[in-house]
Image (cartoon, rainbow, N blue to C red; front, side):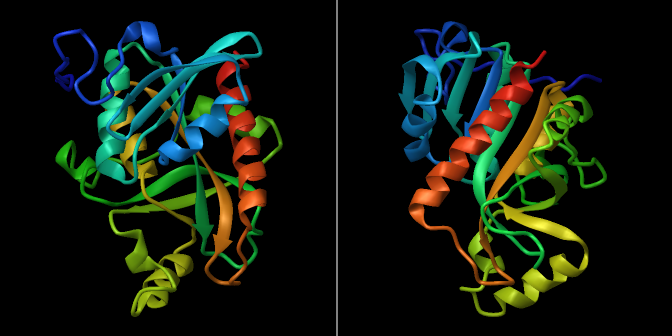
Length: 246
């Protein structure tokens, strides 16, 4: 039976959590966790207009390559990501790419590079409320192919977790947990991708995820703030081109 998602709105017709309606968003959307990054991403578009600013969801819609495109913050973690995916589906969105600075856990992944996920470890609780762990968290193959066809990034497995700080060098025994996933071939630690992939798959949305490698837990290397800004703009352009090339 098809999953029955319920549309919840305010009295003005805007979505209960996102605070926007169909007129405010394009069919193709770039999500990023931090609301603070949205004004920066808006500068990468033409004619970008702020459409919403409600809770953690800040929304700008403009044009790229002359085509409509929306950028929206989704908040940190898989629960607000689940909300974003489900409500965007009610607004007629068809394709979503998440971009975000993330940490790598393989020594050969250089900081400043871009990496896209072909699958994600479901180490969070939000997607489990929709379907059990036997359901895979995988990118849409068409959208993933468009990203890879640019030749601007490689692909790997991401691990999404509700408490990223527990799987980091700053946590007691954090590197023991990191090394467990490193040995299993995971490339990137992340907070939202598995929820987006799982719920997007259930709802029939095309989804993909791109990480800017801001830090490598194995080598200790980190980007400075300026290089992170440059890198996140590169991630935006890669996502926009993949979304709008067809």
